[in-house]
Image (cartoon, rainbow, N blue to C red; front, side, top):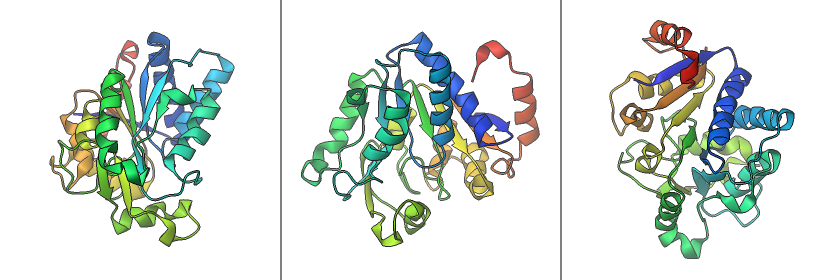
Length: 261
């Protein structure tokens, strides 16, 4: 069973997870982070930035791998995940740009891009901590319902729901790409620690299915139940449909502090 931590608000979640990432970097200066994009992980990056400013720490050796990238956006597009990672993670945290990888969306190189990305993760020694959000369709990364739990980095077609959810980042819904390249569920499950964040009532059904529902490719998020070290950090609204909510609260309240998350 995943560890579920219910916090008061997104900022509290960001502080909690940022301190865990900081502790990881202090113990392993060349730690490998799995970087999620979208609005969900922003509070983590912002809290980590504040922590690094208040208590400087050398992060020059930290490495990172983005979960996914859109296919078909022109180079330099502000909503490409390369641009988002550079803007919201690399620059604010002072990471070394060459140490942070995003899947290639170069159309000419696309057939081999997934295999090359998988090898780059392996060559880095694997991901130490993977940040995750969850979509309303239950998707992890851009692994939509029906994705194989053994899947690796590859090109996927986004559902209309996912495109609609992401339209807020674009000038119009028609600008949201139809295709992406994403780490597979099998790739995600190789990370040593998964940290999944979810906020708001709109994520409650997908979260409950991921944490407590049957393990099925119809709910990609349920793959986290197969991982030995999963931390789920949510606000009250996102936790609203969890059947075991009282137990999750009790377990967190009585967890030894030295265990961290």
